[in-house]
Length: 164
Ligand SMILES: CC(C)(COP(=O)(O)OP(=O)(O)OC[C@H]1O[C@@H](n2cnc3c(N)ncnc32)[C@H](O)[C@@H]1OP(=O)(O)O)[C@@H](O)C(=O)NCCC(=O)NCCS
Image 1: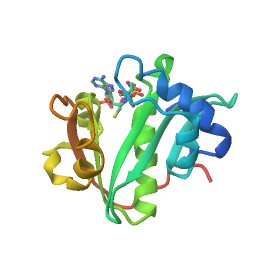
Image 2: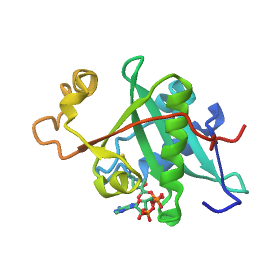
Image 3: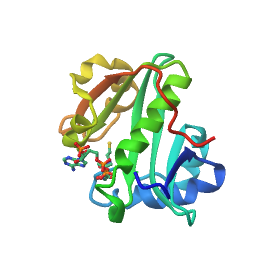
Image 4: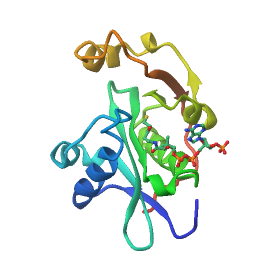
């Protein structure tokens, strides 16, 4: 990632920009639409990549399902910044948040299997995460036609990527 970019925890004031970035990918169904209000309620779970001018270029969140399992969720990189390592960096930062909270088993349900494979995730059966199925999948309109693929990773503590 370029040296003029840095990764940090999100703040309350970021909710609007995170919503705009996230919703760039909602119209064609790549991501769930998320309002600033919904993001504000979970702002402590978000990380962002910011450039020197303060513009948010990437975001992602940790969604906890149990004391030991969480989802790497809502990963979005600004279209004009794709292919520069920001997606990998934001996932690494979400994983760091997980490890800080004592969570060492993370998963993602995604339409981007090649991305998650490239960054070291293993494809698994989603039945391994019944917490996710109970909370989100059973009430989802697309539950009988879901084309998301489940990936997971076991985490170990490592060097910090998040700015203090
Ligand atoms: C998927 C997404 C997050 C990738 O972000 P990115 O910043 O372009 O990814 P990176 O540059 O960090 O790429 C990391 C690795 O993944 C690979 N990769 C990224 N996107 C890929 C894709 N669509 N297909 C194949 N490989 C891909 C890269 O080649 C790179 O591999 P390498 O390290 O071996 O060279 C970005 O395209 C995006 O925001 N998409 C729209 C929203 C979305 O689908 N989010 C995922 C929801 S779970």
